[in-house]
Image (cartoon, rainbow, N blue to C red; front, side):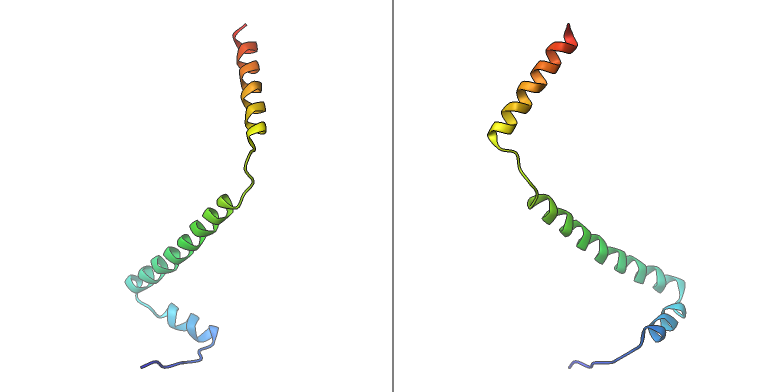
Length: 74
């Protein structure tokens, strides 16, 4: 059975303010858990869809590192 209830934001806020401290902490933990999982998925998507270096670019970086390391050891 499913019931749909239309409650305004102000009513929800009033109900939340009346919660005991234990239930308020539990609600806060649930909200934070939801936002953390959404953020981690967004970060993962961002990293996976980001630009990648080509083999040519990686070779250039390796050569530059080698040249810098040789310069530093002189």
